[in-house]
Length: 483
Image (cartoon, rainbow, N blue to C red; front, side, top):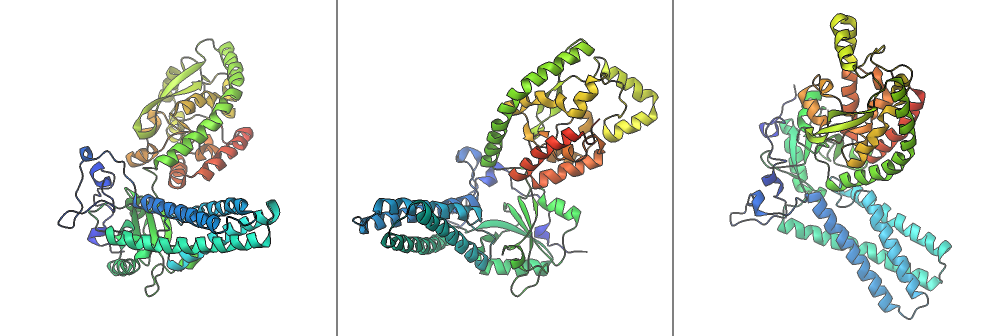
């Protein structure tokens, strides 16, 4: 049995997420006793800025300012040189690419990286941006050798100056604030003590161990063994990131060397997306609108034709709105084309009451393979092709749903799920399609649906959403698992 220090108990209450706690950052001034005041929500209207965002933003501004200074000095010293105007534009281009590559490599601010990994990524970013700029000079804007030499000198000076100023800025932040990201340490007492000592001795890594009573967005698991599934779920409940600490120079931990996974302090075991950042939400929303608007225009004639066919088979309302649970537990009205008879609910209840086999199938899948409620011909076609879901593009445009996410289930479906999992589903925006729809669709039972949704929520990202969206077309055309 793996021991766990009392202060690292994953079930202990954490102040993370409370308004009064999230107003306190490493940049909050201390009082006369050396402590930071606990601000009440009414005392400040300034939104919370994480230490990572604050440090990363500071470093970006430093690199931009340094680049601007070098460009101005270069143009001032070589104002009379041939091609000086072009030289300034090339320096600006190369410096901008440099900052972009550093952003892609996670160097703003680069927390969680060992010094050698940070150095390697910094050099790769500098060399990559320099190579792109040189290629632009040689192939797109040929210049003389003198101008080329000036550019190379200025670009090297920019890299060196940025490194020097970043080190000075890091020293200033260490002096006037608690530098780095607050982290909680869990695991065996010996490994926790070793990890804490190492992080305090190497503050450049940017992970600052704090007491469990203080808020932290990261938890480090320091142990020779992986946490159990139950422990991992408890750790990430209320934490932003869970990391398994890799081997330290004098303290073997998990048996994995940092160089085997990019030089980071450890392996990421879990990410909790309960509180996604506003920029990520806004980007996802823009992506939804960019695709949903043209898709809705294309879908309009298809919806009109299928609605007419539904009315011909069973005259009456061709659309219906079903209340379902959205993000944060908010009830949303999901719009669908009707694929069942008007009295479908009564037919279902009568069937479940007299046939125990049908009831067992319904309780496992909340669907029936031979469903007497479905309209002949058109109903089965709409359900198998998922065309009955097309009106939900309106839900996407309204913001109730996203193109990709866990499907919004009816209340009777959600009632069969554990409360903690239902809460996790409500932490994200429901989707028009999702991992469950492209994997097994109607053939997945309740447990399988939970596993697929849980897998998606734990690892959702832009490229994952893109992959699901593209694979949806193949799943719909193949009619795999649909009935």
